[in-house]
Image 1: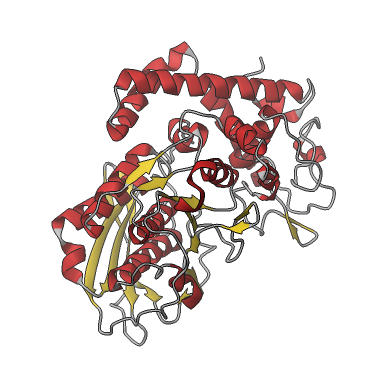
Image 2 (image 1 turned 90 degrees about the horizontal axis):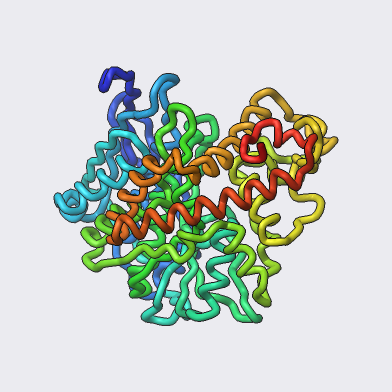
Length: 457
């Protein structure tokens, strides 16, 4: 179905989340909690180290339902927004439909994804049983919770903050791996992981995955609630937290997944739902990714950055001879490679499909056994380069009005003076530009990346 708003066609779809054995309404996409979604008993126990409440299960179902709805419904070929009508069974509908909770939830999702959401909560027919009480030995109260993934930023910032917080920093696994508990100086670190996964394929649906930020923020918020932590750490550097919203692509809605404005909206929602305030903190907001990597690499466990993954592309597009590699040319990979260069480090061979950025063409830069090269792959590479190039352009004085407007949005979210935020934002962009220019120029005059980038000219 479609309707028209703002002179743009908006796709519309209804999705019913149902308990096992229950039916959905007619013409609705169905997410069956008993068949399509699998909750790990072991992982649920990691969230029972303090106490168990049915609300926790309902919140995790909400996170999964939003993610499923986002991924199952393609965006329109023209325009961006979709209208998503979602119904979810919960233990206590009154809690979820309270205006303070519902209004904050809808505002956060609308801002994050650019879609029109309508979420209805209905009474469950059966109560979900409590996980076996096998409490994890986490300290209580803790000081902070950090989303911990396979990414470079989360690994680096967790390591840096761990130097002072130690066991009072709880890591919440938000990446795809089920294992990988962090160890520092031989000690297992406080850790919990996302307790669900889908059993139904959604890879042929929507790929922008803007709702991921909601899942990460909500799961981290639940971890903070259970650990009595008042702070949730957002590990992204300025390029990752702000850059994605500043340097937009074509008609796409700005990417706010790690943006201070979105986390401020999530803090409002979490306070309304959980009844206690939580603060999202950005310890590396005004640093570049290269600066964070350099600081982490100097620590005893700093070599762990080599185990991280930054690539946005999945195994369907980034496998060579059955081994998952990073593509090496998407925006996330290019930022990673630039940051490694800025930190004075080297990844060596066997990391990327695009093995040689010094090559005169993209095709000649690829691993010889890579068989999925196509015009679309090249367009993806061009977009990756142009994203970092556009971000560098914003350091120019001609872009100051745009930067000033964005600084005002950040200042409002962080409750800081706009002039102070503008100064810090410009400083981060200038250091990004310096790192990007040095990286591109180091590739050599004939490198294919230099044909796409303006910063070296």
